[in-house]
Image (cartoon, rainbow, N blue to C red):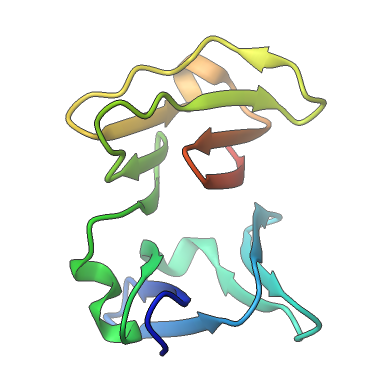
Amino acid sequence: MEKGSQGLLVKTLGGETAAVRFEAQPVVTMGEGKLTVTYGSEEPIEFEISDIAEILFGDASNVESIGELEGFSFAMQSNGALLRGIPDGVKPRLYTIDGRSLPSPRVSGGQLLLSRSTLGTGTFIVKAGTFTAKIRL
């Protein structure tokens, strides 16, 4: 992976790791029980959400070091989604799928929990700095 290029690391519950290197800006979506990664004109890559332990994004000189970087990691949990590695001073923004702005979620220790008990179920867009994700709770 070239310096400054983007990467994604998906760790499964079975201990396997899938690494994806992006030449272009990826589009990462979750829905219907799958995590789908689309980038450029390449075929989408899909992962079963129920099999994902952790998702890591970042810049890296090689894809294996993504998990060691300061940067975002994203994990689906039974009660919602957890975004970790939010830098100090970055205020995440949360939107409904139709673009309505929701109250800014509270970041604690660089972590943001998007809870089903607070937000309910549905599809949401979260933006934190240059990171944007569409999340289905």
